Image (tube, rainbow, N blue to C red):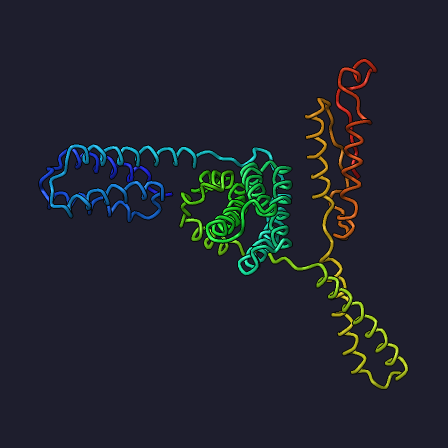
Length: 400
């Protein structure tokens, strides 16, 4: 979107004024008018939908110039309607961009974790799509892409990131048609699939804007792409938005603060550190046998021991994560369940700064969610019943 909306609209209004004064037989004036339109088309950030309308206007004018015939009132009216349509399209796009779809209440840590995990799923899906370029009927590759969109849809819905969950839902439907064989990967369908992945990546990365208080809105081309995902038979009329690729590059350049490491590599690192500690202990035993005759060697081994211990502590701490993230997820789940059921609950949380191994967090997440559901469904009464029993309306769930 152009950074100077007012200026662009003014230029469109000027074009409309020039059109009114245009002499139908003055080829020089018509050429100048076409040049004015082309200058506006060249404006950085002008929406592609507006560009397309203006391109159509230029094409109609240049066709008439080639015939060396004066412009008819019909052509002038058509050009006027196109310029009016361009203004209307631009204004609608601006209204859409001003809407901030980011949730009013959010957990920044959970969203950051969601972004990291989702980008890994997107990378896997992209690899699968490239496999489909060579083997269009690879069912496992199609399943990989489908699972990526399905997982992201569920996680984003939980976090109230509605743009992502809405888009992932329609993309999932499109890929289910590929999976069921209703359509075949290739040609324009392949373009739509790859572009869908680019769109998903763009809106996921853009959540970082919402975390800093900026507007999180639909990228240009969002609604048009959803229309094609819903109705693949309309794929021939689909036009990719070129701004998306440059926007993705820009966001990727800005986002270099973290590195995701596979857990099996991390486990291997910790195992090697443990082996190193054992080897160091064996060396210590050998130096004890040497007695006090090798003081300098013992000093150097002692210094090495400090480094080994620091490395051991560091390697073990890498896998440690605070309980805060899982506790906050449970609070969110509990509140959602309470709102759905009409019950009132408050959470009493302590120990959220305690750090535990990430593997342990993954193991306790599902059981803890089950316990929260049971607590809300069966452990806490409705407000009316609690009042009758002399209890406060709000039930308390303790996490510690």
